[in-house]
Image (cartoon, rainbow over all chains, first blue to last red; front, side):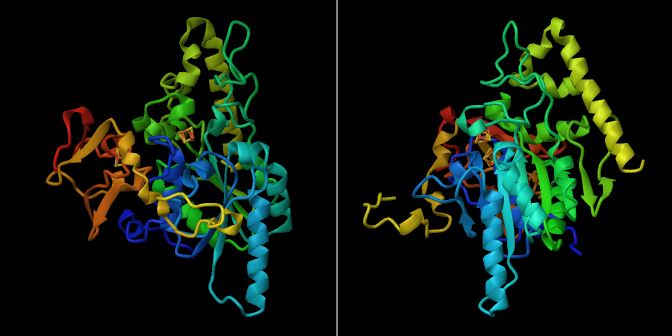
Length: 309
Length: 100
Ligand code: SF4
Ligand code: SF4
């Protein structure tokens, strides 16, 4: 079983995601990936679906990765990595490889909740030995902030534009962690980069699992959330403290809530600092804030119930 | 980095030089730079674990400063330095380089 690592221990390992990439200042994606890469004791092979992280770290002829990395399309990071993993198993059987290598696919919410969902579902069902990490910033940020099925209710995006008639995104978000867990895979969890201890431990656990593992990580995006670059880690923390993004894991069907805020931060505190929600500050939109809060409260209740609490 | 002609480009667009993006100076994007007071620093390494640009330099297990070739000046390190410590401040680049 994987042991947790201290920050000093994490800092001893080589930096496998180096600087010089073109992610926006303060982007959550590279924070998440750095923490994960430092936490692995195995050599890793990464596959990435199209998205900010993929594009910005591999602007031709540069790459920011120091570990084998592959991209083929938007919709198939899970299929790509499971293909590589199958080849690895075949080569291992033939005695051509003896190293223990782990396989990780990473996609944004666009590449995971929407475009890559069937490829991901298929990879779960086939039972490959891999970890899928979704870095969820809640829209198609790479192409200029179009709504995705992960975009929160009432968020302003270019395809759910706030105006006289439209309140921003009119639908609720998809609960992908629940959907992933419903595949009865051995491990599915939610994490946040502000809690590096929890995130690195979950990733280490996921790597040890024999079979598919899924990690959904909230990834604040200064560009799309319209927030100050220095606020990224703080916004991730508020997402968790408000129970918008609960930290929990599902191990062989058993749900454990890893963190419970002593006092739930009202969601308005999180909404009001983000430009994508600035219309919610208007008094006439109080009802929308209430709807937002009610949904969080319902989901949090439901999660606790499902965890048997 | 010199651009390759089509005959020199590897098949499939494979990038063989791992970590080659260090040749790109993303530090030129910066309008504020982090400045650290190493006397105040308690080596909690929060700045290191939260830096999106791998730009906090660790030497011998201690925070040693910033890689200003790549730091984009987001200010996360200064923000996440514990409130009781506040070893990092963001200085406007317009004031000119602090050293060198
Ligand atoms: S648009 Fe958002 S996700 Fe994309 S690089 Fe910028 S901050 Fe990161
Ligand atoms: S300002 Fe941002 S990019 Fe620069 S060292 Fe601090 S956290 Fe890293």
